[in-house]
Length: 179
Image 1 (cartoon, rainbow, N blue to C red):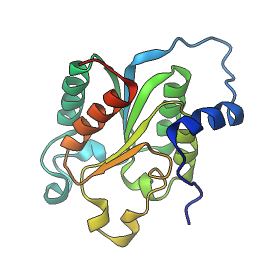
Image 2 (cartoon, rainbow, N blue to C red):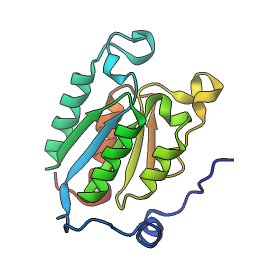
Image 3 (cartoon, one colour):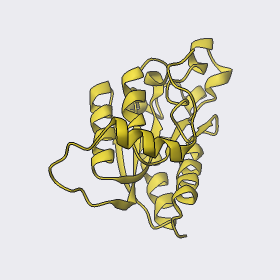
């Protein structure tokens, strides 16, 4: 059993604010037009690593798709990739501190192992969409277990890089962004 149970998004707001009070001395202005897109380990190798599973699109192609999709909804994108768990957690904390409107995350291998990243995601007071390029449920059994799914507002997998665009469209609808 995973350590998280699914609760409605509005319940997160109450629980998060009580469990994780802000420690920032500077009042961060809400960034209602900015979403974060975070990519985990080995995604810097997209296009060359196992193209039969992940396709031939590169991480630069993913970023361009995210920027185009977000622009249609008048959203800005903070796009990041790291092979290091702590750096991904720092960006989640940054999104929280800057009050980002939402977060799209493809944790790659950390999806199945990182309780620390799942704990960081719980602190966000914004919707989180988990994305996977491949269908993680049709692959090795260990890949179907996700610590992120329990804290995410939605999950998209198996649709290639188009899953990122769909995640941004979903976030835009959740936050009431204009098209």
